[in-house]
Image (tube, rainbow, N blue to C red; front, side, top):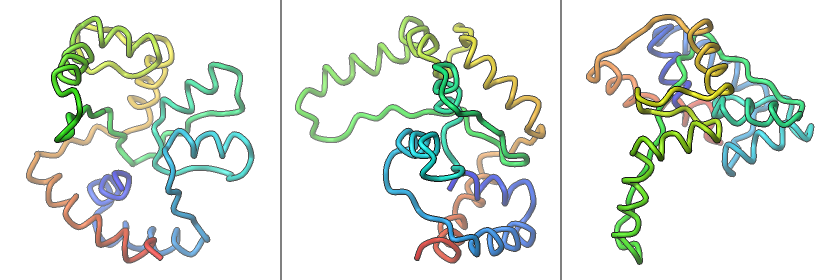
Length: 168
């Protein structure tokens, strides 16, 4: 749904709704598994393409020789954010906190970068695939920024648009 929010920010409501209306008529499916599983299904030929996946999955697969490539979708502004959460009532909360501390540390960020994930620390340069990802993002995406309040307004209406066009 991030791509719908970004379309709304880049194109405005009218153009986005027109586009989503046309897109919805193309017999899309809502894929209930992970983004990684969807990329695998595309590479296996089950689906011709995937919208709204994590770009690094396609890049990592291509690096191993798979028939996979990423095509940044202009004007959709990809999110470079990842998340790490500590769920309530986990059996070992202190071990989980230590893992989170590691992931956010320079060593953890280097480990992630080495596995072709985009590091969030400015202290850690991205590896080759991540660098290719950053280059693709830089060249394909317009320089758009949105204040937190603006993005919050855009996100608030995205669920309704998704349900209107794709939640069947």
